[in-house]
Image 1 (cartoon, helix red, strand yellow):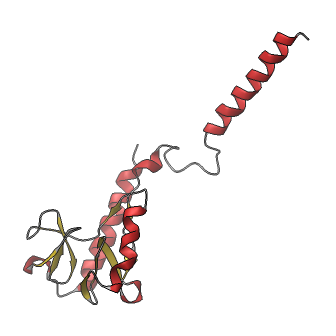
Image 2 (image 1 turned 120 degrees about the vertical axis):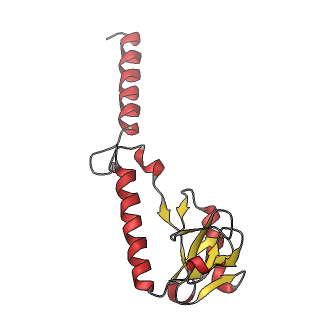
Image 3 (image 1 turned 180 degrees about the vertical axis):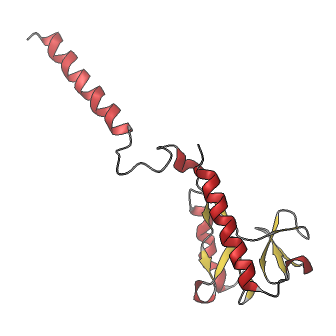
Length: 147
């Protein structure tokens, strides 16, 4: 075998190995293919007492059992949110007292920068609200998995 043949053979082997390393293996491909994971939206980090709240912004933590904390020690974990590579979705109904606001606690409408009292965010039955949020999450998850 000549020198040119050996170089061509090794080049072909290296290219084949490189191509194979770029592909998903059956056991580690995300549902929908290797590029589908780029569109995943996760729930924002948990925060507050007992981890029962959700980060709404880098210094805002809200939960049904305690209301909202702004710039306190309970919000320190929320700083990590900006360091993560995938976006998160704040769970809650859309509200109008703040631009891009969500009802994140009983009576509070917040966006990533601030919070406001909002009567539209008041719900007497928090279990019903949690059920609606879980159903929305499942629906969003199912829609994102559609090809």
